[in-house]
Image (cartoon, rainbow over all chains, first blue to last red; front, side):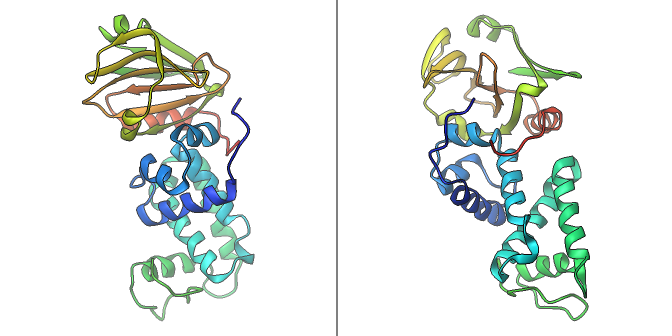
Length: 142
Length: 121
């Protein structure tokens, strides 16, 4: 079994999430994740099994309480959902399930529901808020 | 170069050609339930590898064989040219396999799809 953790999981997942949001899943190297989290490579593998395992942990934590998040945190969570939907969900059942659960949550919201993902994608790209899309929470770029 | 075979319950890493001699291993087998995941990781080449026993040292050209580090056993089969993948195991003689394969991305996807799903911890 893995040795007892000597790091704060929340801090590590937050730092890794920032890397995945900026570089994407494939674009983020293990070297990038080592640099951002301050963990040794062996500790990342020991704790999460793989880069994919780390990403799934980041995604689950970020989207666990989507309806209660402050604006900026919701944008970060949606960015991770976009990365997950684009890169991993087509070939990864577990990630697709998590993305699906997020969509269910968004779909229950009044107004444009799951359309906020499209709005966030364009907003993240620095494009303006189109009238046919719902407003994003904080309205900032990546 | 290694080849990863996956069947219903088992992952087998076949060591190819002369690397069998250098690493003193033909294959490493583990139940899929003991496979935690796989990662394409070119940067792993720069990691300290620990103490080799047994296996053959080929300097900067290749790292092949069993290495001991922090009380854990790792199997390496990588050359300076290839792209290594890291396969993390649990409850197995080897904690980690670092090998080169023909199609790293596709191989990693195959392993992760077959491995038992689990989160952190």
